[in-house]
Length: 118
Image (tube, rainbow, N blue to C red):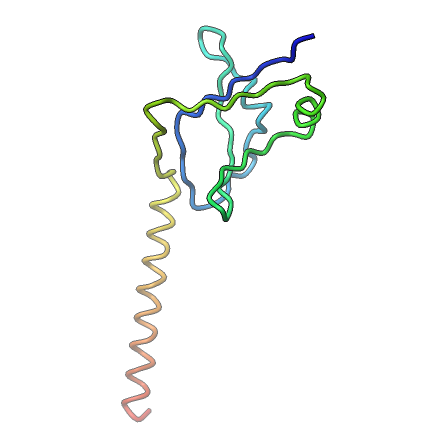
């Protein structure tokens, strides 16, 4: 019996400041369908310390791969991948800037007290 085949076509990367909570599993993501009936969905992976993409395959899928019951092809368009900042990136950057400004104000107050003889 031929293995079931799944094509994972990467179309874009969204970069986020914080990990996604309650993200769909890979199986749940590919269970979606396009209007023409093709499997479609988003899944969330991560980039590890070596800069490699890690895709969280469910254990059941790993077992099927090892038994030869499943074949997964990871496809990347010839044109490359589009990358974008997630909606949380500007919020995180604003938070970091605010923290830096507040630290600068605090440091200025300490400097003033130190040099005013108080």
